[in-house]
Image (cartoon, rainbow, N blue to C red; front, side, top):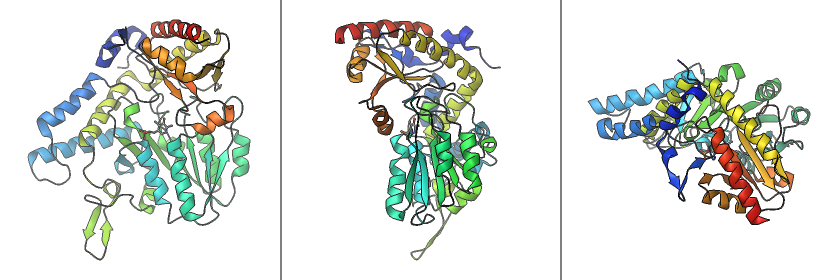
Length: 409
Ligand SMILES: *Cc1c(COP(=O)(O)O)cnc(C)c1O
């Protein structure tokens, strides 16, 4: 049974103990969901449960606790397989986060890319999706080409299609921009890239909290996200990869659990997924992340998208009434993220005053300096809503913003 968020909002908010916190003597208003989402009690309980009842290393022991922990860990993998509609559970690799997942893929192409091969990335990328490719290019002599954006912050798809050619080996693009909240037409991008036999990795860190992802329908080669943005704990990421690509790229980390045979001359790698999960993983985190995705699905991502879109429209309308306020990023398809500035006031100053009112926002470059350079601004104030936020909180935020502007102008 899916929940209607409007009629269940009190109960939903009750599931998140942190929402009862006071910050600077005020009720916390948490509008920094794009940086990390809050954690429901059942996820917190699951971590405590693991350490109080079956803390044990996985895949190694014959003993009872180790088997229980292994079962729970592998059950979580199947949950994510189903959630993303992957063909096989071993195509889901647990990592420490989106950054780690991207680095596994980038590292994997060191031996595959050749000099003058081309990698296409977009101007909208998060820093974690730029630096690994630069490192890869330094080592291989491959070149980066950038898909530009227009004044609305949307990718210019014609320009992307012009960049594609027989030298294009990889295309890396985020599904949703963390700075602007714009949903990119990735299905089209993937289709076009495949016409040139290029491999596509999509950074889904900002998409997975808001929409259901079907990796088979998208025909995406690699898809990555972090579970701390989808009600899970920090320190767990997902790397989905098509079996054929995961088999093709070498492991990133060497160590225990990722090998089949070890001699001093040579080791052979274990099969999927263990090949990419060297060492003791974040066992409790992976199990709790599975509980987090169950929680999200108990409400339903369609319902979440609809509700958050109402919050987005409501806040956008109110913000645009403020004199000299400029919103960056316009598109008919956006997630509940708003980046803005007011006149020449530095975003940090507004963010600091909002914090005095208990309102958590993000200010600065948002790990996306190329976007800020494009708009010629030092940064923005970003508010990002989740399904546990309310219109009343937006009203409080608008009031506080008016006060901040008064104080600073
Ligand atoms: C948050 C985020 C990342 C980085 O995720 P980590 O969990 O810090 O590794 C990468 N890309 C996008 C689009 C993000 O929003």
